[in-house]
Length: 117
Length: 107
Image (tube, rainbow over the protein chains, first blue to last red):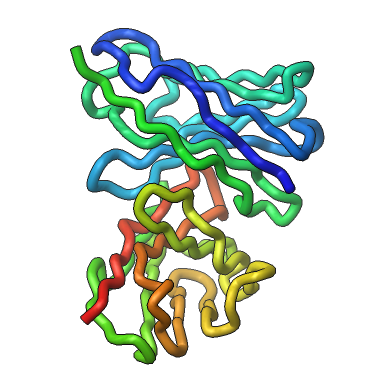
């Protein structure tokens, strides 16, 4: 069974860079597309961006200038960097796999990142 | 961006009730729509994809319908474990977008 696990600091200072990693177990990062999503407190879900196993990326234009998503096939991981964070970036961040159907069945448990000084 | 409008945003219902949630897209998205259930502290759970295809393992009381701009999620007989928040998501074009959610609570 494929499992995804997000990891990274739970607290980031304003103007700094949020960095998260998603580690995949029970399956390979190869041959799939991988996305990051987030859910701010009291709000709905937002798609951040995706990366393919070969490194093709597509980012949400609302965050485009601040996002970098990368993949490390040797570690079976992919990562998110979000720069110049503000309190509005406080959210539970999820990683997920886009299946061959094109839909997202496998998700990580989510990790809360709080932006505060 | 394609906007998804879910209604209602809040729903109070009893066990055994038939529940219908609507998702309207700001432009046609064919059948590229998914429905998720999310409980507090948990990841979203895929219930329906391609507007009407039941994800494997999801109880048959859940069903989806629609195409183009109007979609519905129906729970034929609400069970205690179904009290949660439900989201629609469009995958017709990027950026992917979600509806605002429908919270289903116990009456």
